[in-house]
Length: 70
Image (cartoon, rainbow, N blue to C red; front, side, top):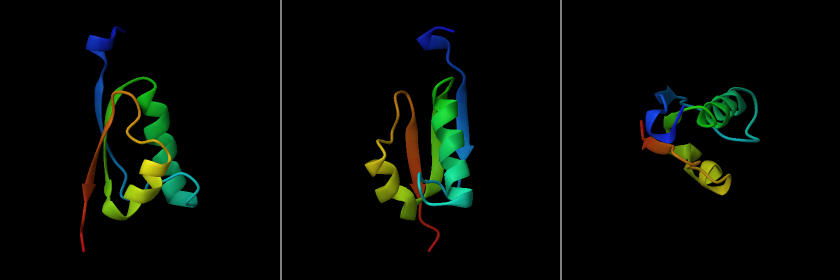
């Protein structure tokens, strides 16, 4: 697929971050791996911002939307 024809994916991962354990790690792995194949928009909680930014988010063509449910 060419860059202009990448599939666009919305990934909702309320808990998402590398090294944060269990569910958060699963969200991170989905985001990281899908980003290699697709243009990903990650929807996640604002509390994950610091960890995700330290890990280098946004990756390539991806973007992140942070939500605050407090």
